[in-house]
Image (cartoon, rainbow, N blue to C red; front, side, top):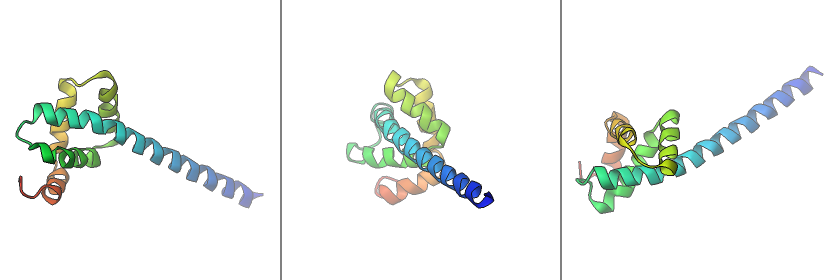
Length: 107
């Protein structure tokens, strides 16, 4: 009986993890459009061919709460808070490393 309960709990946890992963992936996809718009409009120094690389690095290095904010902005519109979130993510060492790897000629 205990084994069945443990197995059921493990299966439930696995399902929760899969749902959470899918939700994270969906949120990051939604956030991508907002980040692309922020970079294109508010960071004119980023060459057009590198906007995709910058967007990828920002989305990859965003924390869950930031992903939610950015995904929301993709629906309701970009504002100063959205720009601040992107700027904050761009300033992180991990994001800078990502940018050096994906767009080495610009940094």
